Image: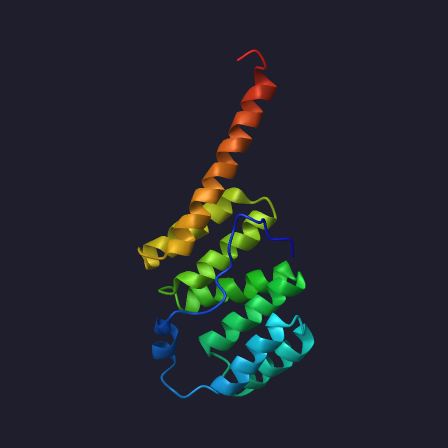
Length: 156
């Protein structure tokens, strides 16, 4: 997926996600999957994540990492599906909203990106990445508005 250079994906969950799980997660599998993702070994990373999800299908960290893998692979539809479901199941987490926004922006859907970032900020008012991305989305929306104004009235 071609993510605009000005937007940043949230690469990891905040500590709050660990509290949500309650049960012990196979952290070693998720850490290994994260390393594999960093090395762009998507298939192996996805296999590790799917192993965790086969025994703990609602684990938010595994699902989030699955979304990151899909996004890195360029499979925007699958990544959107994962992140949207996370926002339904864990609406208090800001990262899935942020990552949805990055995907939407990469598709030129800046209004959807703005809405997702605003929701991210509502869930976590001190989430700096979402504010940074929101500023970038607003700048892009402003640029598009100026371009349209110029097309409509080039003398202005």
